[in-house]
Amino acid sequence: MTTLNDNAQAPAQAQTQHGPELRIRVIYREGSGGLQLDWPPRRIGEALEDREGTLWVDIEDPESNSNEGVEELLRDVFHFHPLAIEDALKDTHVPKLDDWGDYLYLVFRSIDFDPRTDRLRFHELDIFLGPNYLVTYHNRPLATLEQLRRNIARDPEKRLKHGADDALYHVLDACVDEYLPAIEHLDDAVDNAQTEVFRRPTPGILQRIFRVKRATLKLHRVLIHEREVLNRLARDEYAPVLAEHRVYFRDVYDHVVRVHDIMETQRDLISGALDTYLSAISNRTNDIMKTLTLVTVMFLPMSFVAGFFGMNFFGEALAFQSPLPKRLLFTISCLIMVVPSWAMYLWARHRGWFGHYNAEERQPPAGRDGGKIGASYNPREDE
Image (cartoon, rainbow, N blue to C red; front, top):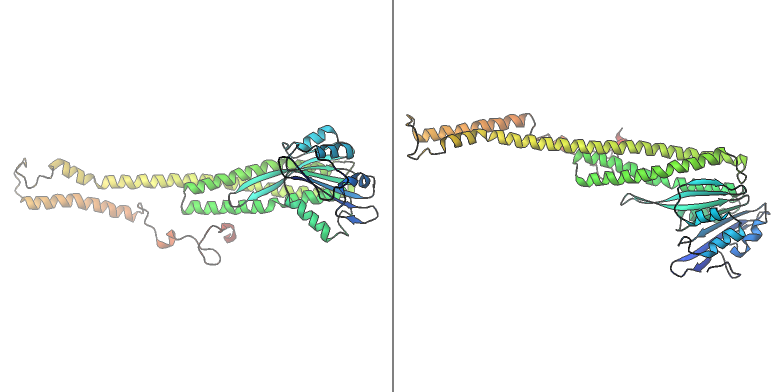
């Protein structure tokens, strides 16, 4: 069992038996104005007694619900409700907000996006907000929290100066800002897929469309719940949130609404790209069938003449005596077989049924810099 002993330093580290180490990092702004970037975890209780100060406790527990020291800290030091502690230690919840009177319990999501595979991974961030403290609990290192910690170290005079609810605003705003690069990449991926569908629809393009669609739907489901959480923070009255600070949560709420609207547009674009792909494949199949049908029709005169005469122009088995020489009869038969077929071919080619287009039509459209469209071509730039 890992406990907060007298020798613990921030960030507190305790090696678990079967996995990575537990880390507890504490930043404390005293009521007098002093900022402690490495406040010892064993002295968290002292900081909580300072009602004019602001305390941020960040707990990184790589193995959820495996370290009893975390549960002991949340239960005995912060006196959280056992149900709230149980929810925090179990990584199974959608974004939500619970009001426990003196403190709030929030579940939010941090994003991890791989642009090479269009894969989204969400990491749960459990947050406790009290009158003078903010507790964040997560199982993986989060880039947003690391960046906030660096911002506090660079500008210690202004950070954590306006209370714990202001610190919560910065945490949630940073999490929402994380979505923007992923959304921009997915938007470019949809545009590129649409361009490739018009150029040459392939099964690889279809797989790319479905990957983007899966990531978009996953992000859309998370944004729906996060929008509700931020809406409640912006409009409802809670003891740990000052009335003058609700406007900041309204700003984050508006940000999430805009992101959600973009995702709705992307869903329509993805559905359109999928319909376009299916239409292109259907048209391509129709063109192939039309070409094969024309080839079959072109060979009908040859099949008729060859089947009727059996090509026995020089044999003695010819059933009738022709006044014409057999060589002339052979020549006429060849012309009957070749000329109609060639005429059909020229007529079909004139109508464009064999896919003979101009050179300009076969070239991909050029971008603004005159280059050919590649993987980064964005057709919206030409609108």
